[in-house]
Image (cartoon, rainbow, N blue to C red; front, side, top):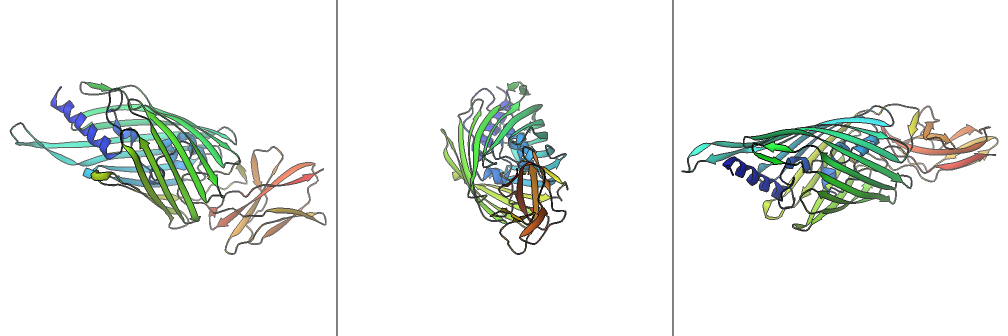
Length: 413
């Protein structure tokens, strides 16, 4: 085996130690290692339990089906720093084309400072450079109110001390939303592609299967998730995590991964809403004697696309996204007063409100308030059309809008 291939295996072992993977085995375990790297702080902080929770533009990396939950155009920057100055930098862009179709693109780059190289007699013979780049494009589509599908394409180049390889791969995933989006199921098959070659060493891509569950209780106060992950040539990984949202501008995350060879690996995180459109996130992974892994991210949300109709369920009611949610209004009521309908809710000062309606089995809600109101009710003419009408209310804080309140029913017989 040549010296250059020995260097490849040495760097592979270094990388696996840095990012908490299992020991190397033959088929695919050492190939294109950067394709398995944790990249997004808020998901890393929850133990990477992301199959069901991956949503908005970050779903490009974890489960492209979640791209369909992107409510507005976003751009985000992320940085990961590990021991021995192994670094990852990412830029990510997401754009909703329609209420059911979203596209996203991202560029990731792994790098570390040059390593001095010595010859057989100890003489300086230059430096070893390590760098890898990935370009991703993805699409997420919401088939109906419950089922979303997505595909991500990857184009990559890896350079390990002059040993280079390039290739392409696909991720294919799906998500199902149940019980008014309080329960989500997700699965994704990642790194589908042909083998790549480093000089004389040919290796399969690290094909990975993920499946998981996510749930929400107490409104949006508590979010939990659990995942099963199996990469070819490695032992399974069991992940779990949760997020607590005590206020609209801050959330706390805690997660863990368990793998037979490495035991339990905890992770911690914090999200902050700095401004109405600007969000900051941080994750920490203690890594024993090797030192900690730190991840930082910042996301900017552009103005949402205005529309009188919004699909069911409202997008991003349930996600592992940065803190960008207001709690919806509570105690929605419909009462009849002299031939008119009064729709009322619990009032909170400093916010405004929008009211939505849908008829019977419609798959979208229509906004029936032309302008946001700062009152705790609106008055409507009683509808004459026979059938069931469902009403819900959202809360506004500037340009930020909450998820929908639970629907209330009014039936005309």
